Image 1: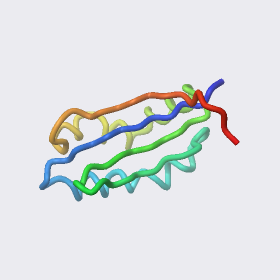
Image 2 (image 1 turned 30 degrees about the horizontal axis):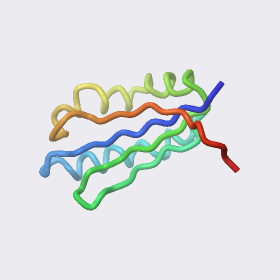
Image 3 (image 1 turned 60 degrees about the vertical axis):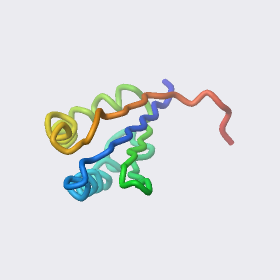
Image 4 (image 1 turned 90 degrees about the vertical axis):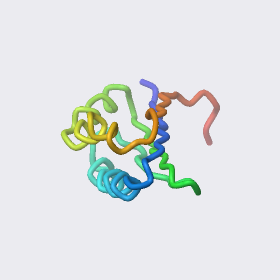
Length: 99
């Protein structure tokens, strides 16, 4: 099974930036404890946009993660109230050699 890496770019509404930041950061620690989680990190761009970077050992592990209640809550209807535009999600797999 190949690892799956997901990049999510999020542009929050100015008044909702802190809420999005706190919501994403609250997911980091419990997600790191999930089976198959290789990486789950939040990055902030200079304009306040946030990037969620996650890598899972398999597609099945990612799918199990997506069923967690906190993930379903945030990525369900809640993001439509927080984001200024569409969620920009990229599901990728590594094709270059690693060390």
